Amino acid sequence: MRVTPWEVEGKIDYNKLIKEFGTKKIGEELLKRMEKLAGELHVLIRRGFFFSHRDLDKVLEDFEKGKGFFLYTGRGPTGDMHLGHILSFELVKWFQKRFGVNLYIAISDDEKFLQKRLSWEEVDKYAKRNIEDIASIGFDEDKTFIFRDSEYIGRVYKLMLKAARKVTFSTAKAVFGFTNETNVGLSFYPIYQIIPTFFEKKRALIPAGIDQDPYWRIQRDIAESLGYYKAAAIHSKFFPPLQGLEGKMSSSNPRTAIWLNDGEEEVKRKIMKYAFSGGKPTIEEHRKYGGDINVDIPYQWLSIFFEEDDKRLEEIARSYTKGEMLSGEIKMLLVEKINNYLKEHRRKKKVVEKKIRKMMYEGKLAREMWEKSFE
Ligand code: TYM
Image (tube, rainbow, N blue to C red):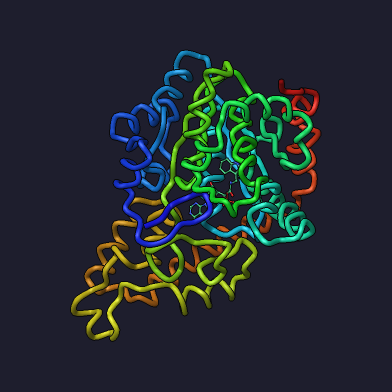
């Protein structure tokens, strides 16, 4: 297995990752505490897709004491967005709604220009398209600031320099695996990714895939010496690709993904044809031995996010395992759920222009952020 911000490969052992990265599992006690404060638990937390954390207990404590916290997450525009990308954003939406806090969303066009062989025009095109998708998710427009790194740089450059002076190349190399062939731009970029954790003098809570954790390690090394809080994080597993449980759904590998702009027929075609099935090869065998939900992609996707109803999910698991429900049937259940989600997404996207303007420039938080300069 290999997990870095730029590469995820192989069968991932999440308990091993917790040990290797030095994070903590989200345990029962923390779940109960969160449920009490939020009034419910989001499906992505309840079912353990977000499985690991740093200092989530301290975030809840700050909230209980009335100090509060803020949210930060982001997206690197390498292509259009797929189902795996929206999960962090869905969870962020839930946190914002339940806790009423500010949210900062970085669009790291700089990172992707440096890391990928894309022209600036391509990165720019995807940044704009990604922002349309992100702004359609439904954040509080006066409490959300979406910014493109290349555009906001002037407001944070001085603070970036202060932070950069505290991180040696040898640390960055050890954390990110930079080599002599890495361009120098990419070796500086991590500093920008951690800067938004300093946007407020409160703790930042970052919901993101666990591949992003290396950044938070650097942040936590230097934050207090700059007069800020160590960032807190809540880490997700990887939404698996259509082909099975190894690796992740990835924009760099289009075969693995369902895109937010896939039409109804396309969603159906991909799932019917490519979704790895835990069902048996013939109907007779399937009826006799049943399907294996542990490897079945339609079941896994339903259980991660798309079937929120616990009772209904249990019933699906039971009947599929017994062979009453066939592979084609569980696939159709998933097709319907995804198409409903995407239909709603398309509906929201029709009126996104005004939302983008508010969250990038004209809303309450956006205006405050453009008036500021960080030193
Ligand atoms: P990016 O664009 O690669 O991914 C955006 C977010 O989606 C998560 N992600 C996934 N989660 C579950 N399953 C998947 N298959 C999957 N693929 C991607 C990523 O972990 C990430 O949370 N460097 C970042 C952009 C960024 C950022 C941030 C991300 C800037 N600031 C702060 C998180 C928090 C990037 O390239 O993400």
